[in-house]
Length: 326
Image (cartoon, rainbow, N blue to C red; front, top):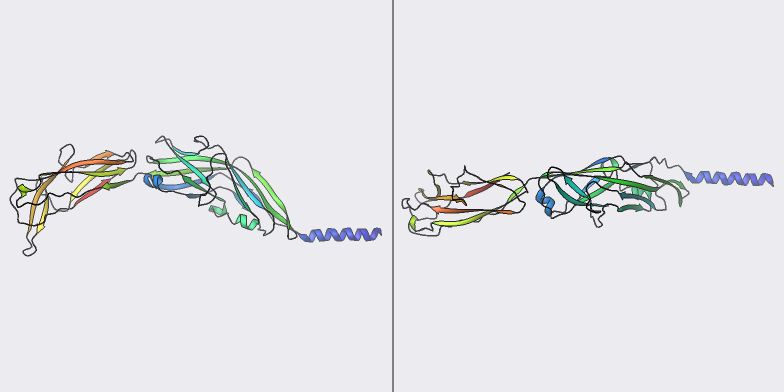
């Protein structure tokens, strides 16, 4: 009887050993990592939901088991460097400005996470969970979404996100339904150093055409036409507005041209552009300004030379190219 019990115990031990499959799990690490949001112009940052995937730094190594049970990884967002309450913010010392942002679990950003939030990744299989490690060097990615409607000057905006990690992942299978979990944590020392470079940008809001009307003689044309250019540039960006004619100038005047269809002869009507301060706006005298991030107006007048000689009938025109340099 004693011999039989020993044999049964030995047999049970043998069955348990056969049912255990070593996983070779090497655990998880999460060193500090850089998270670049790239270079974006100020208006894209303000008007476009820019969601960028960055490495969280978390990397888990080992084999993969497709087995029952819930596998989880959690990230607790710690105190960032420049928060407003629980809202993390990027900051530029050069501009003195802040850009609020949130963290997301995925690119869809259906849920926004801030300072103190806990992000949880879970799957019923370790294979499914570790399949999320698609970041650089097979790390778990986190997504960063800056808030829109900002008015930022150009500069480098940074922040540091501390993250406390925990994980519970199946590491050793026992039969086909149970496993021994690899449980661990990294409470300190894991950081994402974020950076976003905001660049200057300008665009033309409006550049309406100028018409001098119709008349038999140059002296009968509308003498002065008032108009306005509108330009929008990044806050604090230095820029200039240049007006260059397609028709060559004659002395102090710009010219509109008309080419007769039969003879091919080209005739000209002289005109001039004046800035808002009444100085002549030539191709060599730009208008300079500093951006505000909002639309800025450049009033000007167009005036026909009333003392010029009479010209043949026709439609006279000049194309003036507006160039904004910044």
